[in-house]
Length: 169
Image (cartoon, rainbow, N blue to C red; front, side, top):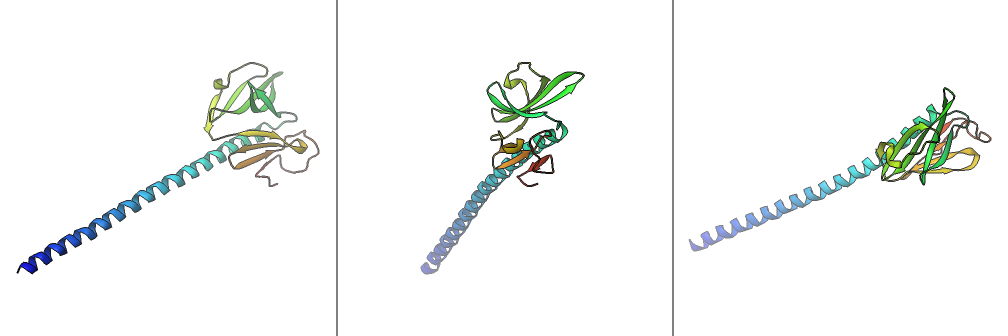
């Protein structure tokens, strides 16, 4: 009888030990899964924000594409994509620029001075860069994504579309 009681205790301890190992394994898998899910959503969100910022700029470029109306200029030491338009014989400028992790936009009469924080926050992104390249093309880059803008009135037209995303006509 003593052997049987001792055997039951060992069986009980063994079952509890196996259950504990199983429970710890389940918790580890859940913790790793949650971490992986968070990383995937962060990467997805960053890509979405980059795409949204470039889509916003592409739409602005299409809506404001007049001869000589799109340029890159300096706005208080920051590079800015500028759209000039004539409204009732007054030149107005829309500037899109990157400041403190955000894409900003400011619309005003051309030549007025503002601070970068005076603009309207559009979308949060990791970076936004503008570059003039051959044939009057303007390259806009955010993270790993890029947008090519071919303004009207630029040099010889190598493309048929006014705005090309990702370098594809």
